[in-house]
Image (cartoon, rainbow, N blue to C red; front, side, top):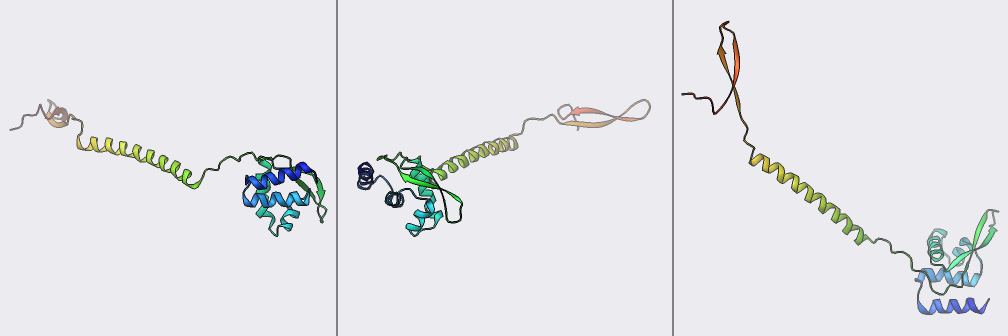
Length: 161
């Protein structure tokens, strides 16, 4: 083990730049040397799916890297991982938390409500204040041939007694 790797490990452990679960995986890789995810999971007495996310996070932070390929006991190829000499993890992008997601959804719903309120106000305005319409009345009239036909008249022009 190189002095540089030991110094990097001690610095990371001291400054608390990794979460507890990431540090546990990092420390195991540091002690085992190049190892597969399955070997680390076995050493930590964890299931593979429980630590695979920590491998992804540590890789994204630049703290571990692929160190080669090997074959497992079944003869299948596996990736070997090892710690890097990086002593300062790159910050991971923040995931949108539940609160932020709810705030965004709330804003979207508020806009929908405002749009619906405008539509309802327009409909109520049309119902309560209808535009003046000219009402046409069809009155029968006689012609020379004694056939009836209609002449449209407005209410204003009709002067009934």
